[in-house]
Length: 194
Image 1 (cartoon, one colour):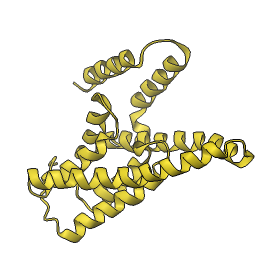
Image 2: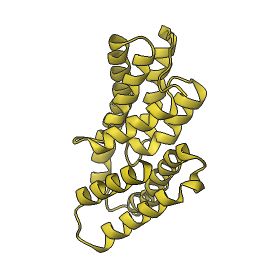
Image 3: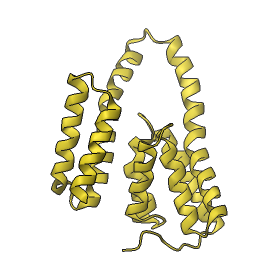
Image 4: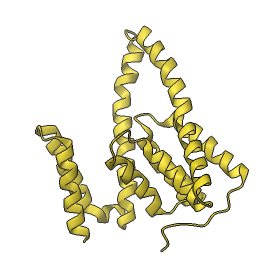
């Protein structure tokens, strides 16, 4: 299976990409990674602008690189652009996906956080803030389920789920730095996949 695609993107398709990321931005409660399943559905399954390998690589590289993990959005835009013809379309894809993802959520967060700060003692505001925790956890688990599915059916990737569960338990019960757990996961993954 090829790891790249050859696309011919028209102006309206670039506009649809930008508008899709504008909408995703407002749904990215808990961060952009929480919207990864919808990104996959749209970019890989529906539009066929990315391959599964490009999609997963974008997330993996951004998560392992220093800096904000939202960089996976830029990598997805870059890969779409590369599939559409090279470096200039890649830069356009990065610009559209990052601007689309950052602009609405930044403005929304700014205004809503000011309102919430002024009304933090209202029972409904406190309940809403407490209720977001499980929603964010569910969205992040959905992303993990999606990414595990590229190794066959998600439940067939039980070693990955076991390693993830062990990592979460270690994070919650010990003072081991997350960097060491990431390194251990990379070594175990490289050893098992080699």
